Amino acid sequence: MMLSTPSTTLFCLALGSPTSARDCTACVRVENMTITVSTDGSALGNPNGPMGWAWADHEQNAGGKPGHKHDDHGYDAGGATNGTNQIGELCAVLEALRAHPGPEPLLIESDSQYAINCSTKWVKGWKKNGWKNSQKKPVKNKELIQAIDREISQRPGPVDFRWVKGH
Image 1 (tube, rainbow, N blue to C red):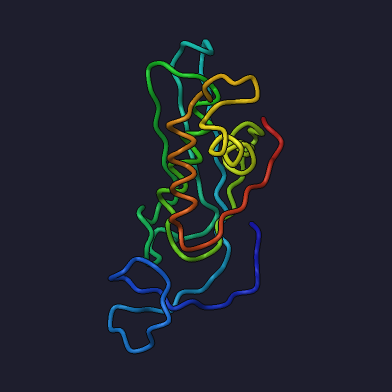
Image 2 (tube, rainbow, N blue to C red; image 1 turned 135 degrees about the vertical axis):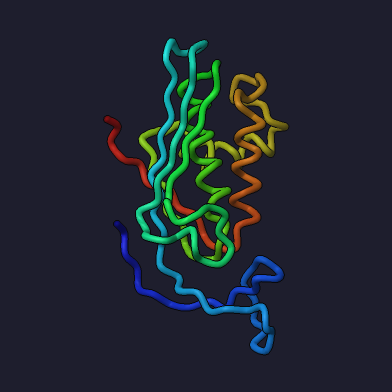
């Protein structure tokens, strides 16, 4: 688990975001410890087989923190009857972001350079280029990447990614 020096943020439960209002009855102080979440996705018979994704956070009771949308178990998984490895990896990142919308820093671990680059680097150029890749073709998995970008943009806390060796 990655540890950082704790600081606190005033978080408004009514607004769902950090605030500077000190007299609001819906506001609570939250520690800004980094939450580390590991993600993974895969597909059998890639590209047209069953696909799965999962995430697990490393922080005990992260789901009980203000602004979080999962219970205390700290993991989730899902899948589809037809998909690719890349779709599975992107789904894992997206669902981890959706489950951790709070103000504390979020570190997402992934063994997918594709998912990390889509979420952090390539998305900027694709937005400028009208969602066309370097070959002027439509970006694959555009809807998932746009959803990830929205979650990162709307999240009050910072999001970082770390590549980890695959299994």
